[in-house]
Length: 141
Image 1 (cartoon, one colour):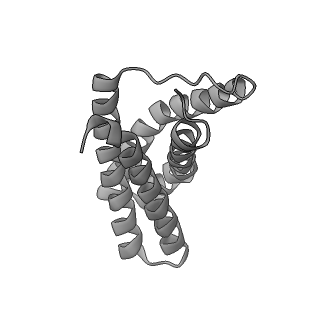
Image 2 (cartoon, rainbow, N blue to C red; image 1 turned 120 degrees about the horizontal axis):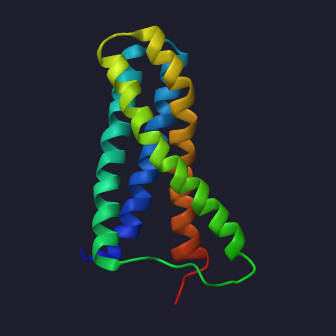
């Protein structure tokens, strides 16, 4: 594996996070707390590995720039901006949600998790979309 393989690895990790987040959501709706806990821990571990891989890639590969097609660039930049801002915001939200669950402070956990889950899902889904736009749909040359 080389550094150029990491964007695909990152997209796969984000996709796994989406799956784990979806399973976690479904399981808590069904009242299966153990399955919910396991899915959410899996989403957290997957997202943590993603972050390490993402930082490694950009440390060695530098900045990625979307140039073409020019007509789509503003749309891409809005997507990237919202993704980036929410990716920063969601980290403390995830840690707070996990901490409250760990301490079994369920009411407080529910209050933050209602906001954490959709933001985390948005960040994970848009991470995959950004990969597809940069490397599959409009490969930058």
